[in-house]
Image 1 (cartoon, rainbow, N blue to C red):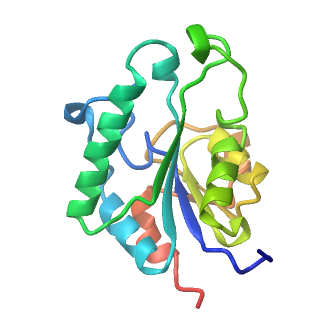
Image 2: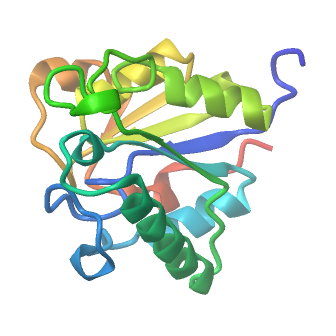
Length: 189
């Protein structure tokens, strides 16, 4: 596929971008959605962006919850988005941690952000043109992963973690939250 022919994607980190980061969220009762997330995702979807979640989930590696718990929460979240007229096209996750992981999850991998593995896998599997895509994240690691995958527009949001000036320098733009997409992402034709 030549450049410019692939579909556009909006890569979204989960905790701090889609939902409030309460720390190792894995149960529906602990999810608080970021204000404006459904409207923003509906807007991005209406412009032809695939909605791809890319999330580090070291709580699995640390033994705080299981992969089955994570998948159950993903199913619940997909249903909440669907109720709002939004389809999450895919959810990619990294269950590893190089230092704090247990058993098979204690490893250095190419999927844990800042490595670009999750994004590169999504690009391959969905025919995405990274140069026409965007990444919404709340950490420098999100911006590094996006840069490593060739994502054309990297946006750091203030609704999650506190980030350093060095992290901010990795982003093309800084927004208050994902909700800003409604006014800041326009149809490119």
